Length: 178
Image 1 (tube, rainbow, N blue to C red):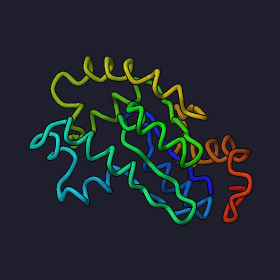
Image 2: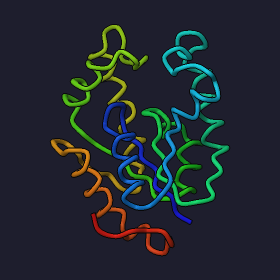
Image 3: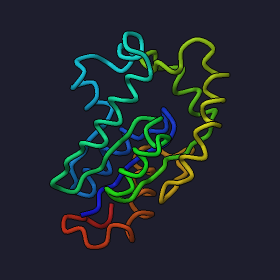
Image 4: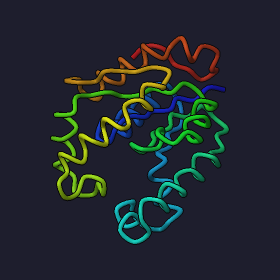
C-alpha cells in the first residue's frame, strides 16, 4: 500500500493541500506536526521555547518512525522533517514523497502572517533564506517536485494528483479525476 507524503519548506501549503488531496483520493490524512503536539501536550512553538529544537527533532523522528498506517494515507510533514536522513528513508518506504515548491517571496509573505512559527521569529527574512538554501538539497530528493506558485489550494491539489497518479497505481481506494 502506497501512501502520499508531502514535504517542503514551511508555509508551502502541506497541510492545506494534504487535507484536500486526501479527500480527493479517499485517503486518510495525518499531519505529523499535529501528532507531535498531541503527544507532547503543547504546541511546537512551546516545545521549541521550553525544550529546544533538538528535543523537538527527536520527537519528530520518533513520530515518523512509529507511523502505523493501516489504510492509504496522505501524510503532511513539518518543514524540516525530510532534511533528517532517517526520516527521509522512512518516509520514502511509506510511499511517494511529494515536495511542494513555491517562491521564497511567497513563503516569506505567508510566514509573516503567522506568529506560531518558531523558526521564523526575530530576523526572520535572513534566517529563513539561509534555512531555505540549506534544506533545498534534501527537498530535491523527493520523488516528485510540484511547483505551486500562484496556484489556489484546489489547483495545487489537481497538479499533485496528476503528477502522482502513476505512482499510486494499484492502491485499491484511489479515486481518479477531480
